[in-house]
Amino acid sequence: MTNRLEIDRLLRQLYAARVAGDLNGVCQTFANDAKFEIAGTSQTSPIAISAAGLDQIRTWLALLIKTFQLSDQTILAMIIDDATAAVHWRAKIRSRITGTTILTDLVDLVQVRDGRIASYTEFFVPR
Image (tube, rainbow, N blue to C red):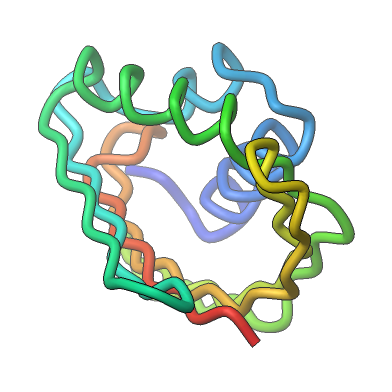
């Protein structure tokens, strides 16, 4: 069983790797059979990503890390209850394609199993 402190450390490790653009570091936080979803909207259209298993997750994360650079990431709130966590965080997200940077609020719902992320759902809204 994973305790509150271990989940906090795991999530901070995930966010630090994302900000650093460290694909391997991000992937190390996920279980092999994890589920991964992102839902949000850009200024022009909705965005939805869904993946099952670390291979699919790695493919999507590689694309996200290649396309978007995160900076000034701040965890605004983290609630951990047993093996479930909800995290409200904010970051500047820069498109490496357009060069545009947008301050974005994100909320992650995370399930942890055996010290790894088993389920990850992220919602985001550009400000």
